[in-house]
Image 1 (cartoon, rainbow, N blue to C red):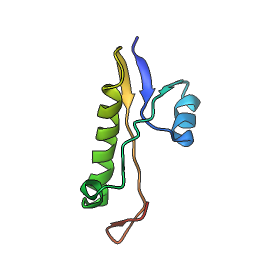
Image 2 (image 1 turned 90 degrees about the vertical axis):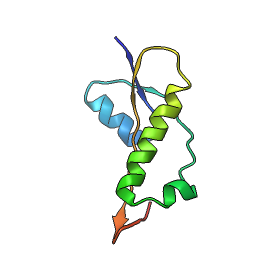
Image 3 (image 1 turned 30 degrees about the vertical axis):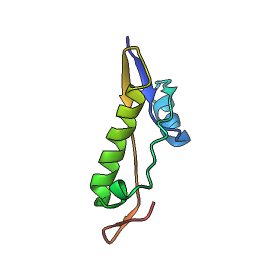
Image 4 (image 1 turned 180 degrees about the vertical axis):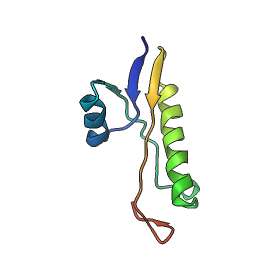
Length: 83
């Protein structure tokens, strides 16, 4: 069975998985989220791009079968991402 990897340092995401009976291996991607590339996107596109980038970055760091969960979230107000 592949290892479940959470590409996030979010304690709430880890707790959510653990509450479902999943104990993930945590590997932080260290993706720089504050770049012009990501900040120029609409919030809904930005969170998808960041989640995919985090998952792919972690994938490059491991050499075993794994299910990698990459996540991101933002608070959007009037089309602007506020963190």
